[in-house]
Length: 272
Image 1 (cartoon, rainbow, N blue to C red):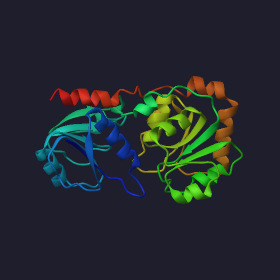
Image 2: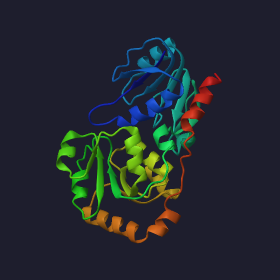
Image 3: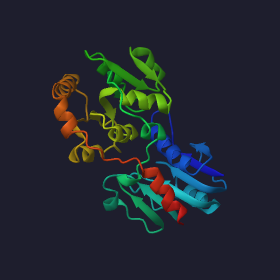
Image 4: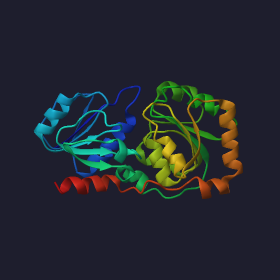
């Protein structure tokens, strides 16, 4: 039996859960331990945490035939296993001696529902600011005079906003992405999925660990990034994107994520 261990709290962690499940799915059935790092025997274990201590990793590694660690900023020195850091600059920042290192955006996992989604008729501007939108920005943005669709897993935001897709399945979410003429997105896993689908995007940096958003801009996917929301400036940005849509499609929708990340991880692990 395979196992995943992941941090996923009320205020953060949905993206970590998504990417861990996506990788685990490649290896078959698995059991989940969410916010619980008590090690148990496993054929393959996947660990994604900002809080687990070295001893947790060490015990999980010892009890697993093979183990995969997901890391975003070279957080600790890891025990033996496979380390996946999918940051653009991973090859520069990761210095690990005990692990086989899979580094860079070639290892970004994309869910099957997004890989299989075809382009659809455009209906709305998508707002997706993390699973819970901890800064409560979605409803403020929705007040602007555009056809928005707010995606959230936050019940309070779902009650306040007008046009809401609440806690959707991956298939429903992928469909909503494909129907978006433009997206306003946090710089987490949703940004990678929007990039795969080549949806024009305005990015909002809502967490300290989302520095990679600037690499998207450098490499031709994003024009505008907001660290702090100024509604008037955001409105200007939305209007610019809509009024210059052909230019946006030609210049700011370069696909950087090819969708084979999870399969590459599986292939590397199976060689061990």
